[in-house]
Length: 305
Image (tube, rainbow, N blue to C red; front, top):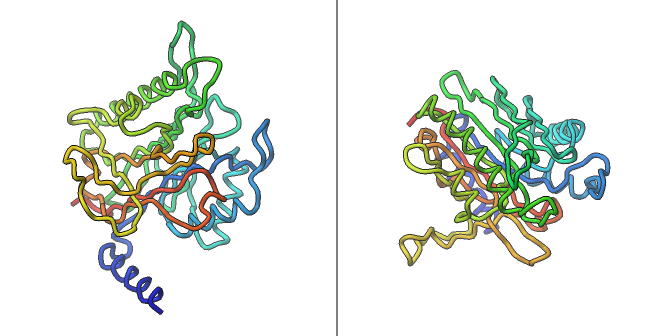
């Protein structure tokens, strides 16, 4: 009975803060090799894992969902149709490939995608040789309603696993710098642009890649810093630090560590519509059956504030 009352109260509070169609949710989720068929050392996604991903997506019920580690377009469309059968329909989608031929980035949207700018062939020079951005960047413009649109860029930067072709941290930093160039170009065109940059950036807040993506000054992005909705509401005892909320998004089994490496960053223009209290990390029992990442979500009003 107590649980039912608490759930009902939470629902009332949600509707009072976010009245129906006056707000929307944007989420990002690394699906950990959502493949329809095995590829190299990566197995096909198990039915149990697929079901858990659908459960997490239903729990968030996002209006726009950025995905990392999705397989080919067949895998994306299978997920889309499975979600539709479960009552979560995304009429619009984008799938972007990069140098990695097995896992990709994608976007599912309930709102129309009115422009697409896929970044599939970006490269950089390092150690005297040319490298390609592994997973590419998906960039789309989304129309929420006739009066409100935003640009979304999702990325999956180089992992922290060592590779023979170079230092993984330096490779990731170079990918981050390219992503920042794209961000800077958009904000130079329109400093008031509604922009969301999100995904698996594979590094912690104070690292060079994340600092590069966030940037400085008038074109700096704001870190929405989703946290668990567990009642934590106290500030940090050290003013220069963020509150000690539980914000981790990824479990790394080899080191037995938990880190926040997934982000939802927004432009200063988008901050006006941001609903801080409806920005969170999803917590579900047995979340790890779905992926080694937890999904995060941020909510926004559907009009300028």
